[in-house]
Length: 445
Ligand code: EPZ
View (cartoon, rainbow, N blue to C red):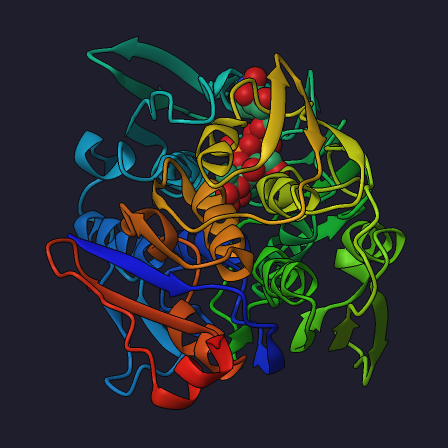
């Protein structure tokens, strides 16, 4: 296995470009099952989770072609579905595989999908997915850790989610587009990635209104067709937000290109309140543009509470905790979405952070300096927060279990190096020693 070795304490300066959004790419790739034919998707990020999704589609009978130059254009052939199943060995690695349920039921009338099981950040149930699909006429039985679904007549219906669920909304929306009649999804998730999926479905001929609000109306159609022109995945707001925090935590100046400016509003507001200069320009019709961040003065403590969009995103909570670890004062972070999403706190404390987690809230008492250490990643965003802490810490940080990061951050080292970071990916058992250049030696006095 690999580890990431970061030599910290260097303010980051430079420009990076946001990749396609992981959490838009996954549902859109799976949504191609709804329309037999050849699909072409652009701006698909090169991530472990995307590879897993393409592998799942291949197991279902839909092969894909990816460019050999690391480009972002993916072609999929969804003419034939051989198996209406998402097996345990794929789902256990990526719970988003549960998104195959809606499309397989809509296209095949049946589906066998492994229950995702929990993960590091929580139990992650799918009861809302099943409740919504049942309202459209689907019937389920659970056996052997699998959900077995059948539907004879997929019909429009009223769905009221008990809480906003991103993939729950996406699963039901993907079934509703081929249902007979109109479906109304109440208390729907408003995340930008749900909006991107709705736009892709509409490009295939679906009739959807209200995406981005808490009420989505779908007028079912008999069939969908692949888009005639390549559909481009929206840029990743969480990746973009992570690089902006990298600039903030190191006291540098970072520009993120092709960033979804509007979708990042709650994070940009918090960064400004923390004492960063943040501006945006070149915003195109798709809402993507350049975001510039500079931090010269001290970091002010800013308390946040995660909320469904348009609130502060839970996927930025761990990164925010790393930043607040170096603020001049105390802040409170409240996690309202997942029941166990403070595991990064313990690792940050090993680097000298002063954090007091207590159920769904954590008090962060800012310290003057973090110290590099060997740390262990536990989940995707926790690992991002440890990278950020390592970039700011004095000395070197080694982060193990790099596979968590590879799920959601495309070419991380290259992008960080473009910002001036000293970061290397090496096998776990390789020791990295810091070569002190003679001039560095003199500078160190
Ligand atoms: C999506 O997960 C994202 N993943 C997550 O990103 C993100 O953290 C999360 O939404 C919240 O924004 C993808 O889009 C692939 P939810 P999802 O259903 O859909 C409860 C990352 O780091 N719930 O919106 O699984 C659930 O327990 C990942 O990129 C039920 O109780 O999250 C949670 O408390 C991590 N029953 C809340 O709803 C259900 O049937 C919100 O979860 C479904 C959800």
